[in-house]
Image (cartoon, rainbow, N blue to C red):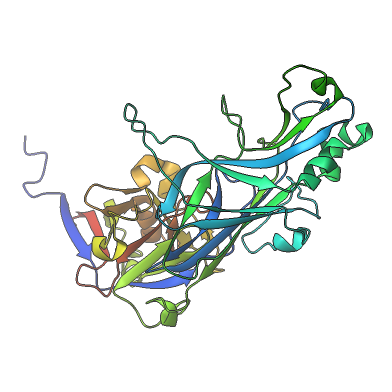
Length: 413
């Protein structure tokens, strides 16, 4: 009936943008380290990212009123720390030292990575151990077994717990004023090697969590023909304050000279968890799309390529997910509209081709409509305080570069 015109009403095109994208390496802002999904402990000298040292402090709680009987005598005290995952090697010994906390930890308080946990502890050393991490896989499930670090402690701590007055154990709040917890210090590695352990600190489900255990005897037990040493555990639960302090030393790293500056654009991007490194991204070409009222963005995908050689992906697993955040005029970070629209479509997961891809279609459409401004972006790890990992990506100044692939529809006049 010749109601439609003979020519197309809409023209669909693709654009691959590289030249207007620039990238720089920045230190991550101080991250929160209290009550993470998993606590961390250890020291790791990375050949590319330098030295990371993570210490740990925690409260211990009563499981019930401890009945030590008549004339209890402490036999020994041990700290048991469990872990399943690690980042680093299994040949370098770690040295851990344990101190009693002098200052309170508060589960309702926010703690950040530069918190002085050592300054919150007594100077008396309760115990130390040299430990070489191990990882064992269950051949059936291919899951990792729980591994155990055992640190013998001075019996004086057990005597303090055994001799506590009944009024100091009426409930956990009162008890944690009497015994504030422990600080576990990791000695910094001075040479290449080491590892960061992902602790299974708090109890979860059927797993009882890490614990402080007092072994003892009493008059009732001594009267038996074959007495066994008795024990009483003090446990870490989800209601225990758990805090990490984290330090990074980037001396001698390849990015040290250009750290925290928007000059000296590099061919590599360095991204690191545990309050380490992030990349600042500028896409100057986005501004040219503003007020393009006869256009609609079908898809805008940002593609970052892992440098598998520098990252040593066979040795150091890259993060499973990164975050691409938007900056406002004050420098505040927030997730783009695409994340709230659909986290699955937004993406950011590590793919089999060693790329991270972000769908920022909604954000691009906001720019076209004048609803969003272009002040830059940050690329960071998704799990900042509960995982130890890092990745090196191809930067904007590399041959591969960072790509913004835009598919758009142009309405023909």
